Length: 76
Image (tube, rainbow, N blue to C red; front, side, top):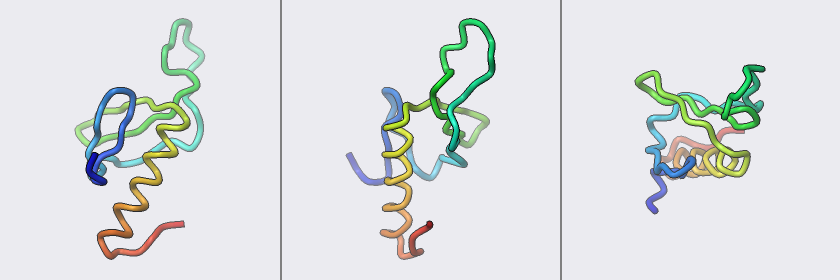
């Protein structure tokens, strides 16, 4: 897959759509919440996806690579 995408759940997401990625897993305390323990990835258009820890980490790596490939340098 092209480096402008990352895989979250079963979706190939364009990196430029990502606004932020949660550092901590989701916890709302509601009975039956299917997202607890997963990491929120906030997209434009008021959308969110919930990623496993490995998916979150891979997405962050993809964002860093995409940024460095664009000639803008790397983030911490």
